[in-house]
Image (cartoon, rainbow, N blue to C red):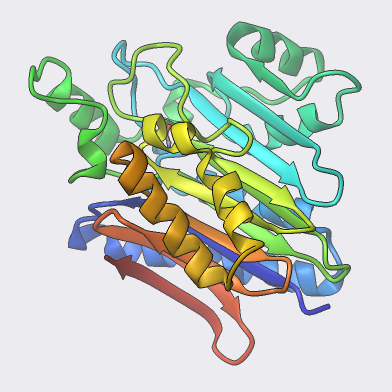
Length: 301
Ligand code: GLY
């Protein structure tokens, strides 16, 4: 089967000055990972690798470049989902980790657990010698400056960035040579979130979902609304009823109509069609295209 790969770099009001960096970051993820998919790596390994590339890129709100919380710390969330087995691994509110998606993948192989948070997750990772980094590896001058700007702003709400302002969650969805689907999502959450706040990204069915029978999806946007409609699972349910693009569009319309939500999705349905849609001003994304090789765009509403 022809492999497929689609990634996103967040859905929000991306200022024009950052468009190029978003396009380059999403393009890099496709260009580096797609050849490996053609050589036979699994969809699961492909989404892990693609998200790692995005986590390392300071452009995005994931890994390096993540928002700071209200106490000036960085807490990260991630999930990875396997469409063949429905298994997933997820971590939330973890600190000092450059690649939360790798931590989620490690947890996926745990014999009992699939979702761990905070200090417990951190202890688990230490027992597996998972690499930790200093905050200087994650913190960018851009986010430090932004933190100081909003720290005491009485008008700032964690929803504000999705209406207009900085950086987005990242995600990837892949289909491998065997036709298996996988999805992964990683985020630093929302700016000035309370310590311990967890959004949609690591929540199965909300931030990502994968089922070979319907499709695989990664979501981005304002987590408090995305969780309420389980946006990724909702999109996969819509895949069963209609073409992929229409399914993504209808899922976002439900997000908007039911909970006044703001966000976007990228996905692949079980028939091998790409899906993407958002209701924020922009969504940064890229996918592999047979003729053009990479299509990367800042999709506007
Ligand atoms: N979608 C990322 C978050 O709200 O945490």
